[in-house]
Image (cartoon, rainbow, N blue to C red; front, side, top):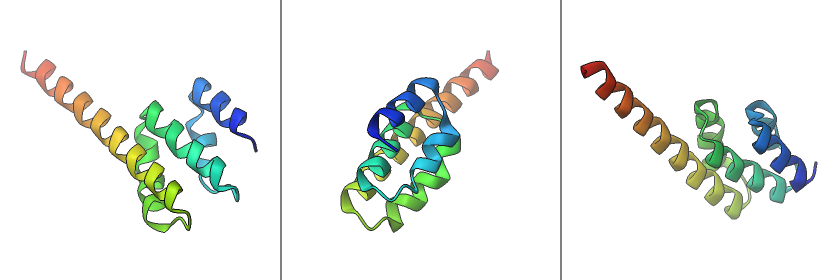
Amino acid sequence: MHEKDIDTMRRARNIDGLIRALADPDEIIRQAAAEALGSVGDERAMEPLERLKFTDADAEVRRAASLAHAQVAARLAAKRSIEGMLLKT
């Protein structure tokens, strides 16, 4: 797999493909996949990113996974907040 493949999956919002890329043997690919999942912000990425941020052998991959996890969590919190406001009206 190459970094351009990660970008293609990000643009296509191929969450399953990006999650699979988190297990790639190349740390650059794992890092790029984590960053892409953070930018997409899909809830399905939460568990794989959380696992990766604690278990990956590479510190940069762990950092990227941690940041991406926070980005997804923030997006979900904002979405739930908006949904809550809409239900009150």
